[in-house]
Length: 211
Image (cartoon, rainbow, N blue to C red; front, side, top):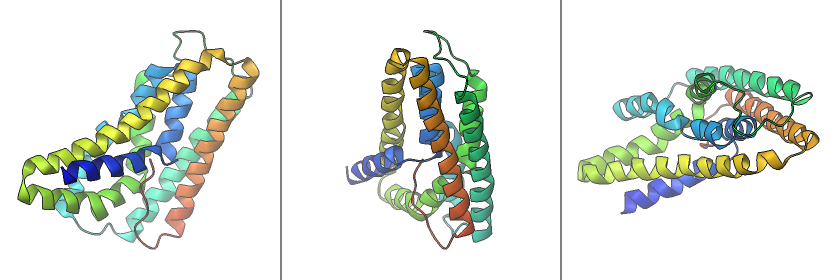
């Protein structure tokens, strides 16, 4: 029970804290509605598997140089997505009901690349997640699985709720309001990318885990 509650608490913190993936969920929800946002909300279930496995087997410190490279490269990619969204927002029109402008595979690929290049999941699992998991596994494997299940349930669930809220209200927007919100989402993406780059350049130790 303790590991489950810990996983739920950590998942909520990581799920609602502003970050690159959260901004992508917002952008996708505006463009393609709930289903598009849902796909991005569930990206950690795809992208985090190698992160978790490597962290649990290594449970060592991630070399500082790798953290810096991940942050800078990932930040540049997120900034590129943000600038592209801002440019699109200048002439964008609210999509028709049922329309999804971005192909599903392309959108999910963007999310997976962003998450794999984001150092926060790596640092979280190496610094906190892997030690908790391995200690719980030594006592009772069910407790370790409860920790992981609770973490990803709330991490993805919080983003699913956001995607639903955005998808439900996007068709009520005027063209001007849609452009403003899409542009704001692009600004959020650009800011998240800039933060990633700055954290990589100034990296001194373990960072928080916003997604």
